[in-house]
Image (spheres, rainbow, N blue to C red):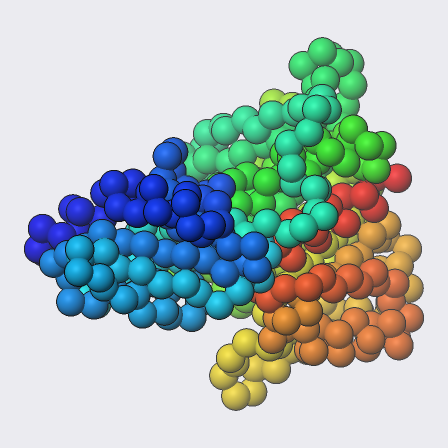
Length: 382
């Protein structure tokens, strides 16, 4: 690869003064320290600038691809359309090669480390750090008998956990989406900040939140997806490894009423299968933006039948109503999954199943999931 790829790191040297003098917005909060670009304009357009004089073509892929224009100094630039508030993965494409932007922090998503940009939402402060008591995220390693490997998970512990040695806490087990891992709900999802603010405001009970890696597979099988094989392996990992680890090492309450399971997208499917098939373990189930119900490409003959997946959910809904304290489904209003989700929620309600439904502005993206967690957590363990 030619030398210009090395020059991608020289963003600060090009246009820094001009950016500050011409009113080109402000640097994105997701930029690395001192990086001037990308910049956010007041109308949520984004200015990207790349110093790559040897390149023949430069694009930025922000869900939509934008062509950058090169000036005489070899600096490429583009101003995007207005972006939806929230967190968005993106990549640079240099002469057909997809690369991370060295001016951006990197995040694990899309199955790889990728750049990301935060577009603020005016008036929303649920994930802003405030002057309140703070819990913390603890990264732990445990041995999985299912995979035969050491695996990592993250645990949010609420403020005061270490001081209240006799107190025990309920637990929310929350799962990421496809292409992400146990870092997603910590970094992109801002779980600790959301829970800190809710607990400080008296809106949520103090709880532990366990954030594990849902990409679980045995040799010869592919991790992820919505089939029974992958769901069975995830259930085994959770029941035989993760929950015993948490309940042996942390002061937590046991019993279904003190456990919740939730997840986004692929993780929402895992929560649906695992939570509703095991109401003796979980009395609280949250399903965010899952493609399980439809709205994503499916093979012919694979339409979703809830009664087949969860026997009795349509024919004996009262049994689920008696066992579940909270059954919650959410989705983004611009997500192609919304119509199949609304249709299924109405079907559940028509059959007499108690289900809470919420939709939030946005597509299949973290802003919807942050709001979903903020909403769901307030309903738990009452």
